[in-house]
Length: 428
Ligand SMILES: Cc1cc2nc3c(=O)[nH]c(=O)nc-3n(C[C@H](O)[C@H](O)[C@H](O)COP(=O)(O)OP(=O)(O)OC[C@H]3O[C@@H](n4cnc5c(N)ncnc54)[C@H](O)[C@@H]3O)c2cc1C
Ligand code: SF4
Ligand code: SF4
Image 1: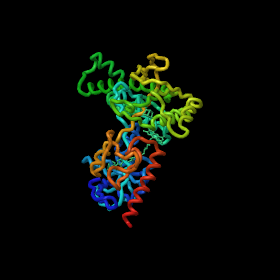
Image 2: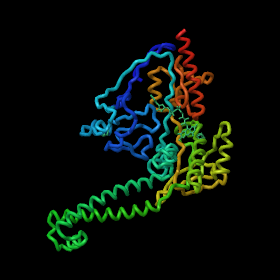
Image 3: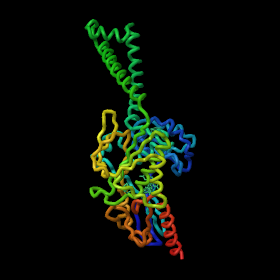
Image 4: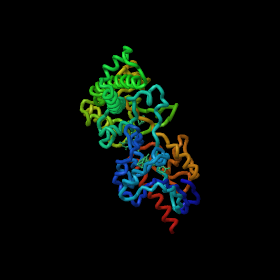
């Protein structure tokens, strides 16, 4: 939002529509441009667990179903020659000349629904998020569990995915090195192993060409060794079945957020149940100070998780996570019921990151002239929970504070009704 003025019933809102470099009225969402685009980058929607192209759709079900060019990576925008997507697009939708559009609307009321951001778990250094590959966030786990996610619903560990990706790279490098060795061998009528023996014994001249051949052979040997080691590791890897879930990561912690994020106890139980459905060998342990299963049928869901899906609930706050030589995370915790400090090894640790206010919320609030609370969520009155401090501006969902989907949806309906009331009144 670029500008905001007026009063309840008569606001003027100025917004910037960023150029997507694809004409929305022409793009059919067929995806042929992305198929042919040569630029592959880390996929934000899959939290870096997968790759996408420079021309992309943020996620498969996105509406409108229109592609966008990410100018940070697109070759054409980075001063190189490309334009393959434009040549590929049969609808003629790719438009490198498109510009941002600044538009002004006259509206009677505003509903702020900017949602939340995940707490950055790397701030809790003892948990090793960002340092230990197999310590992930619950949102990353959701992507791994998803049939349309990077692993098609198989819970593969990030360290194993990295090994697989490196193996594919090494395979390619090995093939390239093999080709260039073959050209040396053809020229000299000698195989590389025999040549290298002679080179080492000083039995060949050692001129520039021969030195390059020897270097190439040495790097081929290193690649072959790495290839064999990785191939063994990849063949021996399996889906993660020993899962640990850690609750209140950044929530109910006076170093970060004092409040409860309210939905994470439930999403943890849900994720553990789904993981068991995907791989029946799965054994999940949930580490929590207490599980706040507040809601209709929620406590029963927790008990069902234990009875039917074998979830083990441990009362205790995790002190530290380390890892063993196979990248298996080791959890150090106090079992407060047994009053013992214990360590347990898992395949994967899933952190229930706190629900944080999105950094854009405070900036937006400033433009709107609305107040935010101590935690940077939009401030509301407890007797009037959808109204911000500005008449005619309403809020709903996690823009106002942590809440689950049913509550966000109920609030959204109420906020829409409140906004309609204002608009109808203004229209007389
Ligand atoms: C790992 C995980 C699992 C969960 N699982 C469940 C579950 O199973 N069941 C459940 O009930 N709840 C679950 N939740 C909670 C659920 O995600 C939230 O309740 C819900 O997303 C809140 O909806 P919202 O619309 O308020 O916010 P969001 O879903 O965050 O949506 C806000 C939208 O606004 C957009 N936006 C932000 N700023 C701007 C701006 N300036 N201009 C335009 N657009 C903007 C954002 O891109 C986003 O698309 C889960 C949460 C997490 C983290
Ligand atoms: S111009 Fe090239 S790099 Fe850029 S989006 Fe199109 S195909 Fe991809
Ligand atoms: S919902 Fe559960 S995990 Fe989330 S902050 Fe509250 S108590 Fe902690």
